[in-house]
Structures are given as C-alpha cells and as structure tokens.
Image (cartoon, rainbow, N blue to C red):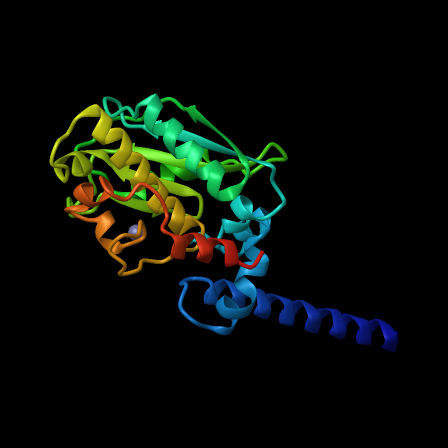
Length: 247
Ligand SMILES: [Zn+2]
C-alpha cells in the first residue's frame, strides 16, 4: 500500500513539473525577445510542425527549418488573392524560381480560390483565413501561403508583411501607389521582390540598413516600390546569412 502511495506522489510531482515546464515554454514563446527558451530551445522545437502548434511558435523564422532543413524535398507556394487583385503568372514564376534558388528545393505554385475584396484589411481577419487554409506540411513538401490584399488597415504605407510563420501578405494597392510607373512588367518585378523580402523574414532574416540589400527596411514601406525596382534579389551579405543558418 505504501508503495502505491509513493508511486502516486511521484507521478503527481512529475505531472506538475511537466505542466510547469510546458507553461514556461509557452509563456516564453509569446514574443521573440531574448529569454532562455528563445535563445536556446525555440529553434529546436520549431523544427517540428506539431511542436509549433503545441507551443504557439508562429513568428517570423519559426518555420525556417521547413524551407532550409532536409525534412522536405519540395516547397509549394499557395496563392490566395482578394477578388479583383490577382497576381500574374509571371510574378509567381519569378518568386518560385528565387525560392528554389535560395532553398535548393523544387518549388511549385498554385492559385487557390480568391477571397472577398475589402478596401482595407485587418491582419486578424487574414490570420483567421490562413488558419482556415493551413494544413501541416506533408511528405510532399513545405508550404508558403501568399495573400494578395488591398491595403493594411490604418497603415497604407506598409507594402508587405509576414503572417504567422508560413504566410506572406502583399498589400497590392499600397505597392501600386508606391511605384513610379505602374506597368505590368514593373508590378511583376516589384511584387516578386517584395515577396522575396517577406520570405527572407520567414527564413529568419531581420531588417538591415544596407541600401543595396533586399532586407533593407525601406523596401517594405511607402517608397519601397522605387527601391524594389533596383533590388531583385538578396545581396551577398544576406545570402551568407541564410547559408549560415544553423539547421
Ligand atoms: Zn521587412
């Protein structure tokens, strides 16, 4: 009888400490600032899509192992555009080619049914849309979701954004307004460059202040359209940074 009681206490203590550790991880993961979990463990857990769900790891870079690690052989880009804001086949093709170059993985793109047009978009609504569409990466490959939306609510200067750990949003109306010459050819190059900038965030890159580099913060805001005209790819510094990513 005594042994049963003893075992019960041990199991109870283990359960309580397990729960405490889980809560500590989840709480630490709420932001990406420096803390023990984020500095030492986050990346190790984020490699597994199931752990990302369990611990709430849904920030920039949390899915980078899907794209740069050796778990998946292919990448699918799933594109959802607001009705009337379609993205050209050429833009998708340029972006897919760049993703393939930088990750070394065969990359395809698919257009999914569009969503209702709204003049300005609330990021929370788009996040719900992504969560609705989100399927775990399968043995077939990793997934990037791309949303083409009108403009960000209360921030028309913002041209693009990441969404959770595997989504990208392009604010097409804001991008068109930031360009000098809104022709289809320009839009293809600008939009694919902006897509690549956001994908850079999902690979774990932050902003830099180097004027000729794609991750320059300015490429994402107001006059970014003009900058994106000249910068169509990651600069050597950024490519090195991606290569050095520990997987
Ligand atoms: Zn950015």
